[in-house]
Amino acid sequence: MVFSQQIEEGGARIQVDFASGDLDLDRAEVLNWIHEAVHAVTVYYGRFSVERARVLVVPVAGSERILQGTTWGDMRGFPGLTRIRLGQHTTKRELVEDWTMTHELTHMAFPNLPDNQHWMEEGLATYIEPIARVQAGQLPAKKIWQDMMEGMPKGQPREGDLGLDRTHTWGRTYWGGALFCLVADVSIRKETKNRKGLQDALRAIVAEGGSIDKDWPMERALSIGDRATGSHVLTEMYAKWSKEPVEVDLPDLWKQLGVKQGEAGIEFHSNAPLAAVREAITGAR
Image (tube, rainbow, N blue to C red; front, side, top):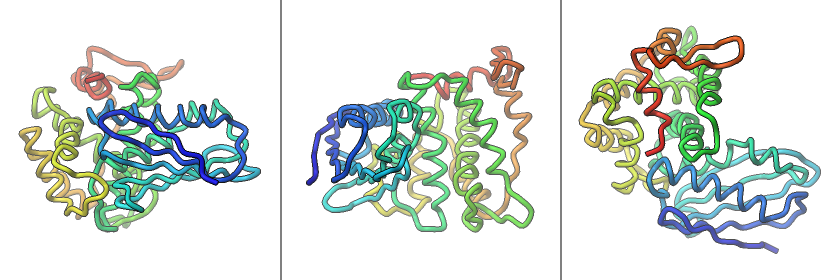
């Protein structure tokens, strides 16, 4: 028997269904976890990306933690549907520390792309999820820059790699896509004197109807984003990064942004050339 609840936020109604199975957590705690993710996505995009969505929570007997999330568009009468497999013995702390729910809901905010461009879908979700949670007050900024410093090198091309449309390893798909997003965000902000960023481009794509239930060519989505920022960053970067391996000088980028690994953790340097860009990326809108 399925137990259902509703969440309304950001102009959307999200139906949360609990499939049969036992959970140590109260349903109210799980519902709050999902609502926090909905809120973070809404804060980042200024609205939720689809008017109706469904989240199906599937308890997994004898297991712990959040095991898997998958999101589809235009599924069973819903523009967006996310299935979350949740271990029976998952704790409240694991929900608080989890990134999966926000990551999956972020997928609803971009058109469905061909398989060879899956890196853009996963890269966007990998990059946006922590930023959205910072903007929503759910994470400290230093935490996500620490994670970026550790994760972004996994997206660098390795020997024999081709462009992102042609190399589909885990690192290039998730972190290579996220690295594309970071460089695009910084580049847009440099070109626009920090008046616009990737967030503005993505909000415009959603406003034009570019959600997961639509099948769009990449070029259509990126051209909308470029118009919104008054730049050509996204289309020009895609033309290059999709076809050939691009290595980013990450040590220099961190230095420019004023992010440094210190003895006690991440340190911010406000006098760095792009410190204001770093602050704008995670700043609430």
